[in-house]
Image 1 (cartoon, rainbow, N blue to C red):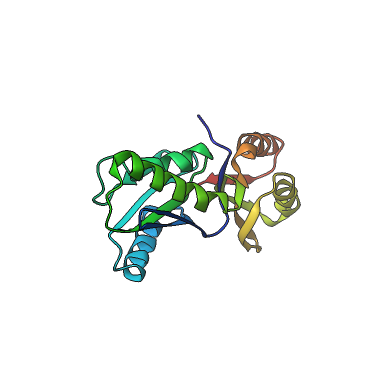
Image 2: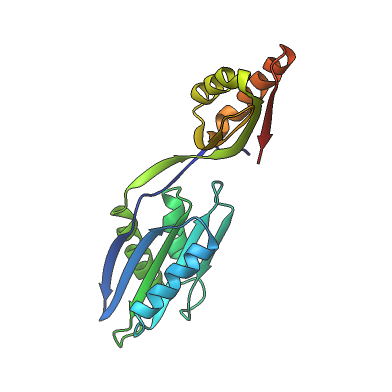
Length: 204
């Protein structure tokens, strides 16, 4: 199924939970790639180097098709899955939540751990600003100078965000279009070409 927009968080937010001496510091981050996730995890492990566990979960891609939950030494499914559940409950993607645990000396049991990680993650996400992001497709126009007006009309009509443009005898414009406009704009370019315009549209 084609995804035209998705929910993510605007910036970093933090939550906290304490149970029987154990402290759970939760941090939620916007992250779009596995590489970004790894950089954040590496930085947190340095900053909280004395913590017992750094458990986390993330969902990536507009359709949330790339995800992972990590218990980091806690009993299976007692940490990563509850964190992931909170991300999913808000229908978020491109989002990472890490819960850092300082052990307080008393074991909480699996049910206690599930509650602790779930609650800490929920608090961090409750403080986050959720935003709606349009999925955009990279496109590139190639055309002769007399077609400039037609191309600029297309760019305005279909809300193309221009990143690069070049105007001489042979012209080009690069940008990104909201995915929900792509099919309609492609059809209009085809129609203009049938009417004698010479506009080449490349979809990256």
